[in-house]
Image (tube, rainbow, N blue to C red):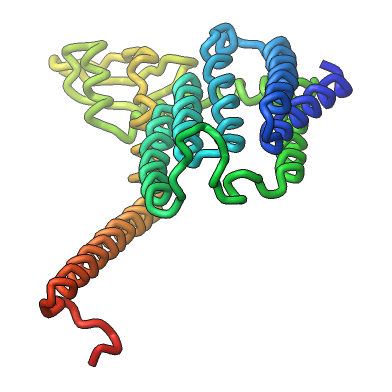
Length: 314
């Protein structure tokens, strides 16, 4: 893909998104949808045609990518906060699907868990603070900030400048060579996985006994040999033997992440736990205070003494 065509597709997508965000009439929004879909389709075709490898032979990355992009557009252009939050959930699910395709299971579930909690808080604030959406499907009676977005041109310009830079880095020769080097580095992760297996002695013993049931003791250390690894063991009859562990004996991705968190970054893990615990305590205290104030108002209306002492009442 030549740079001129790349920038043209990004500009077309930016114009379409701007018309969707700024336009209030159906013909304008329809025109923005057509222009945006055309630019997005051209970008996707250009990127997919320049990528190589088995990971890109599946249609799933394209499906998750299209769902995520279209849902993200609706997040920024929908005029009803509740529906925008629902589209944001769809963006999170599509992103989690891409993480699963990259064998990053921990990131996929972490994104869903963290942002699912954030979405619940978003719903709470929408129901408490936002005005009721009109039931006739129009913007009549809506506040100005629900009808007109702030700085749509600046936001669209900044976003699509980043998109053009990222797309060009992927499609250019330098970007392709960088991706190939990344694939080569990922092959070295097999050695790190075998090193992590040595830090899990019980699992290493089980893997050795799966290969040689008469293994009684591990004598040597693991020696990676490509995807496999060899280790010297002592059998029940006292003899020593060298066995080869298959690639399936390596720890799973979630085990590698858990081992790194607990063994390599324990302080960060504890700090994150303390922060989350304090956030939970704060939410409980605020909720309890709101309940007490509601009870006091009800008791005052009934002519009864409030249960809590308020400042300035003495």
